[in-house]
Image (cartoon, rainbow, N blue to C red; front, side):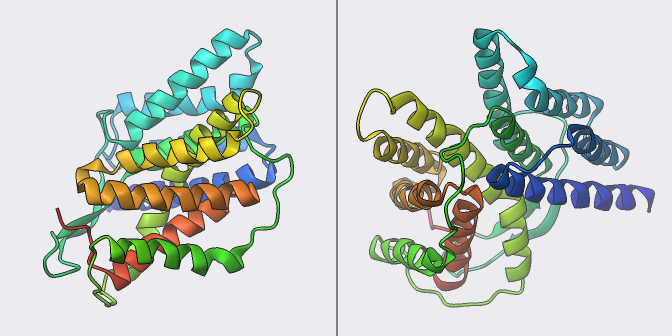
Length: 290
């Protein structure tokens, strides 16, 4: 009973924390670093008490969070850049589950969503959430953003973005399969908290912005080039699903990258990405057959 309570507390804390990080990344509104470190530490300790993380992973996560918040205190620019690169690599390793010491709760196991597609597991991946938190904290600390003041969210364009990606998915071979599985709500929540936010933090906030800043004084089409290159990387990250999925993910990445560049709001890219994933889940064969 104690372990279950600690596990619930841990998941509640990290879910609220990553949603808060996405919000303040857009609004540059966070001021109290001590409170944020406290919440993150309480989350990791809760997971430790629930035997979901080891003492190594506990120390690893807290160290990265502290560095991501206080990295701007380092005056030497070369050292600061090196540490930012190290944080990015460490976060990527967390996101793809290369760091040992995490036990993830299986929300749903071996669920068949579409006939002809493999069954899926829905996992609440602790390490991937912390990767997103660390990336968003670092980006906010180092003021990595495209616009000094975000533009309007333009959420009325969200259905258009979603339909465009789903049409391409259908035209490139994914069959219609309209359904509302019992795990739909579970899928939406876990996909948002444990996947989409971290992916957008890594590809849009970190990589796309870094490429724009790298190219902006060198080529006149810096933003477009950065969006295309980021989208190609995003597509290649889905190569486990086959080349069909790489092509689809690359196109989707172009849409997410454009939505982010147009508004300067990572929350818009997150909502676009989530909307596409939910549309795929409910309207087409899911997951992409291998």
